[in-house]
Length: 81
Image (cartoon, rainbow, N blue to C red; front, top):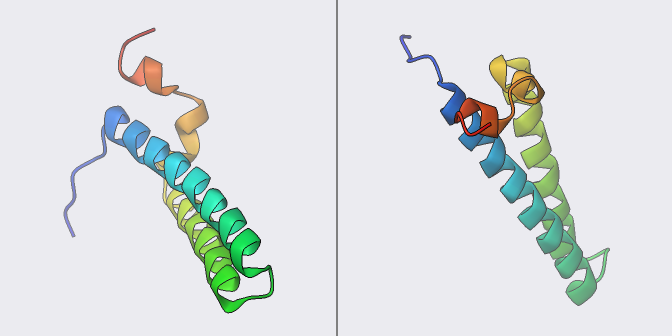
């Protein structure tokens, strides 16, 4: 399977998107638990969504360059620093 090598900008965008999704997921999880209670099925589904997102991040990090995001900050990758 041929695929293009990700650019630093693409890796930065992916990392930022995952960060935004993680914050939104945490917010949804907290709100769902507040509205429906922590033991409700809907709250459990929101918790599982956050867990799935974390597993995706780990899989991406295991797969390569995403784990190096600390080495190149997004501003450096874009040439703004």
